[in-house]
Image (cartoon, rainbow, N blue to C red):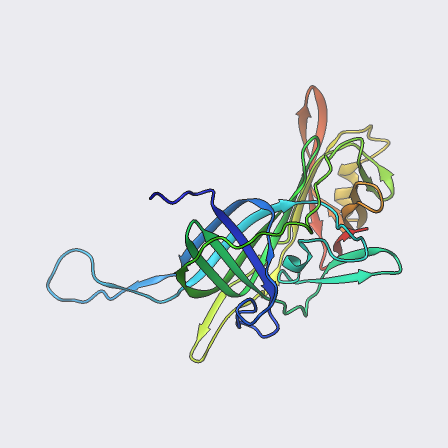
Length: 305
């Protein structure tokens, strides 16, 4: 019988000991309600033996690395309880971010943490096969576009575990919240506390996530991050916003995007952002700016409240 591509699901759990399967050890498995699930089940490099054996053609090869990569996108949506992390919060804890619940303020902050060491055990069920990653760490990217639903794309790398046969588990998506449309009804965007007409915003944390293997040691590490972003706005009068002068000055600015009312709100903000070299564009006959953003150090933050 043919295996069906759509019968796939991702489960995950935070690890207490790096590289030790948290789910097999009894941790509750959460399930991803998302889209665009992809897996590279046996990533890494191989090395050819390249013998001088008097023969033409290819030489035998040996796998010198074996790890797994997984990518998927989840909705940029709020938490059911603002004082507790959203369903995607645990995923961020393995992407160099600290997840901090604040019951008094009824909000949760997801901030870059240089000292973060979180990792995940990830189960990828694919139509009868189970691919496991342990010690998984990764990176994330945010996409916000008017008249659409925002999304967070996660990309994880984990240590290889032999593939087994398995049926899909009983699924529970109760923690996931239906997203709100990006647009005039729900969204707010400000630069230095002044509102502007946002068309799109893209952010990439760009973690560097190498697989390391030495004698007696293997680990997926996050060794650095180089966040980048681009925003597209309707071009206002120069007297209202001189993006060219701001870029030349190299000044730092504060940017805030929110979607949804407080109580069902998700957002992203950066307290130290420089505007790059703007270019002109066009949106339905209206002039726009496409502006690259320089996100300085660990100054950006996701939040739900």
